[in-house]
Image (cartoon, rainbow, N blue to C red; front, side, top):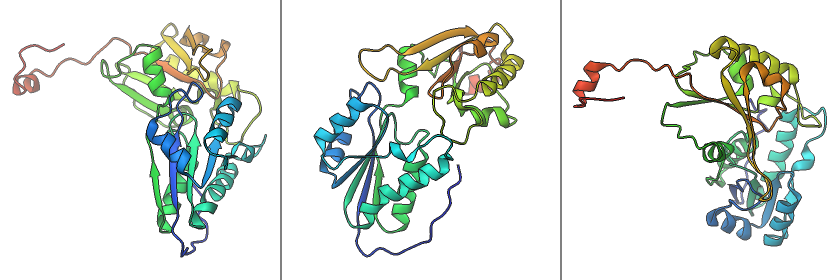
Length: 273
């Protein structure tokens, strides 16, 4: 999403911004590196709806402030993101060390993190993003998939649907936020656009046929819960629960391009499958 650029200002006091991720399973996947940032921050922010995770963070750093209240039903998400960014940067501009903790990976489908880092650096502050476990990492583990077996393409579901992509059906396909196709506002509930799911189904049927099996996936968010794994034929996709948190995994059609023998010989390989 495109940001609305604020008026450039100069700040004489240098602050810093650390952007970290908590992974999933509450705080069970947080790294020691990210935990150190959380504990050392002068001001800690959190974006997530997990009450247990929020209270755990408060125990690590009493300055905790949730950013979740920037969302409200019907409010354009760009407006919510701008509010979050300004709140995150306020202590940085005051010369403090701020840390923002997002669930999952802080750089995967987290527009405010990238924008806040870019603005902080433009204003002369230091800003760092730290790696974390994403929903895709959890998907590979829970579905026991090696993305290098056939190759793997990954798209935001709306972007995939509205652009004329050339899809390689011999590789795996991952579509993020399948339940929120075409929605620019924050909505109550989890199934934001069933009609969008139906349009996506039509596109996938054109590419893969009616009977190709796909997986609706959601990573487990607390240790006592299992991940959501729903296996259905493409044509049945609109009949199952596809939420804004759902990632859609489309296995490859087992039709692979033939090996280019000339290139294979140049690599010194006599046989390759």
